[in-house]
Image (cartoon, rainbow, N blue to C red; front, side, top):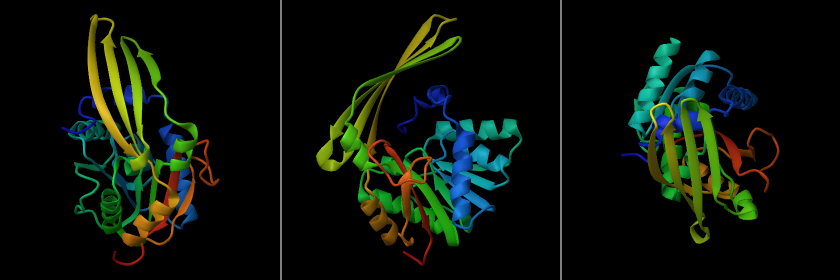
Length: 255
């Protein structure tokens, strides 16, 4: 069972305020900055497929991979309903699959930070490297260590209601600073007010924050040229105000 097995049915409700179309447009702009404006695109760690669908609607030939069977099932159903041809498969981002000759690989919503060791991060980067054609571009985001250390962690509660459903999420983080990691213990209370039922889901998400020099070293080991780094949805340098940063790298030779 993956970390998102119980979480998956409530995932899209929880992130209904996330602007996938705007994020996709931003990523497309950065890909164009690096010379890639169309072609084959692989979404590595695609979740329920909302970014992948947004890219497909913009004309990309899209495929998606995710570790969660439940999320892949949701992504396939969503693509079929939209009439979009997207090849989704269940798979591990840290294991090279059959995907080859892609113009771009994207990995969004902090998939890189779910790799909690340098070896795992390098394995994920090598999956992207294997999937890309020579000169292909890799775009991914991650938790930026400078912001995590500057802001610290705190318990947060989020309540979302979309009748008849009400979702209450309690996020209790534990900061393991020596290992540059945060374990977020999620407790979800999932209510159906029409049926007067409530379900509790508990999951622990282990997340590693990274610094640009660590990212660059792992990319170089994996066969990528030096990367650009910026705060999420900006072109400014990573900073203490934004936990989310992104990197753009180009495939060089063999790792």
